[in-house]
Amino acid sequence: MGFFSKIFGKTDEQIKTDENLHLSKNVGVPYNNNLIQTLINEHRELVKEFTKIAKTAQNKKYKTLKQYLKAFKVNLEIHNYSEKIQLYTYLKNYYKDMEDEDFIDEMSKSAEEIYKNVFSFLKKYETVEFNDQYLGLFKSELNAIGKILQSRIEIEESELYPLYKR
Image 1: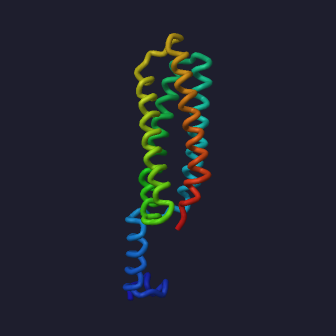
Image 2: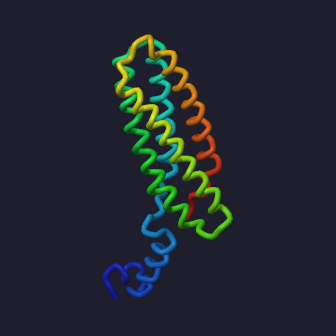
Image 3: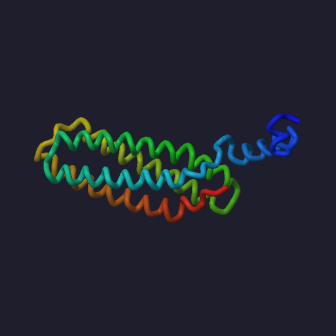
């Protein structure tokens, strides 16, 4: 028996079996007690940043607008990565061959499509030299993206995140 095995009262073989069961179920993506709260907090920050972008555009502060768009893009990429790697990988393995598997796959695919569209929007406007000429189109596209993101956040928090469990 190893040192930690003696402390926790398990043999080395029992520990190896426990580890293998845990890893085989999650394919190396461990459960994270803080993940859902972290993702919800990121949603709140993204909403705040999005609101700042809209207000800054309304006030025609174009230089600041570009800075806010870049910050939003970086934070959205971080959030997308966390969801893709930690959340979806875990959920897809946890619910493999179960009733919720199709829902999780649909959510994952639609998330990728939404992020692709949002990143395309952000990329388009990171190269534009803002002026009053672009403002109307920008605000219209920003409003449409805002509605999509708001709807997505509501679905994730009410239907997807509750599926994340041990």
